[in-house]
Length: 122
Image 1 (tube, rainbow, N blue to C red):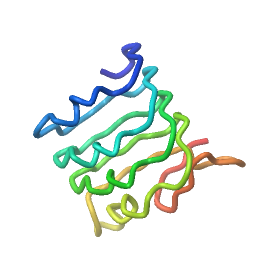
Image 2 (image 1 turned 180 degrees about the vertical axis):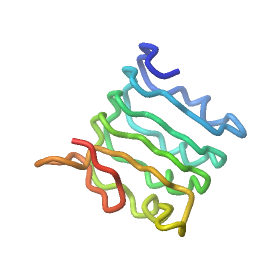
Image 3 (image 1 turned 45 degrees about the vertical axis):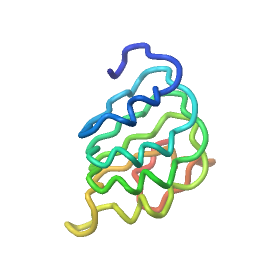
Image 4 (image 1 turned 90 degrees about the vertical axis):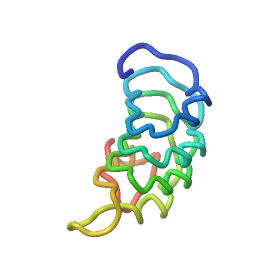
């Protein structure tokens, strides 16, 4: 559903879909905060929410996604620090958790998000 001109918030019903492995909602006009219910999607492997208008902080419950390999959150209005529990799921040198790629807006002179384990975008 990427680049489809979607607006509004992510419907709550998405968080009750059992076995959901991929969510690709990038390049839309979605708004609101990121729900802590993302942590309920235990089978999720891929989450692309970049190029939207999400605001607020990144929920720590996203760190419960032990199967998540890719998380794209850049080009939104997110602020604050990436929760430590998410970074603890990061895979480095073949060791650690499942998370292989984590991209947020943590680059530039005045980054909106701070992160010790991310690929940073300006």
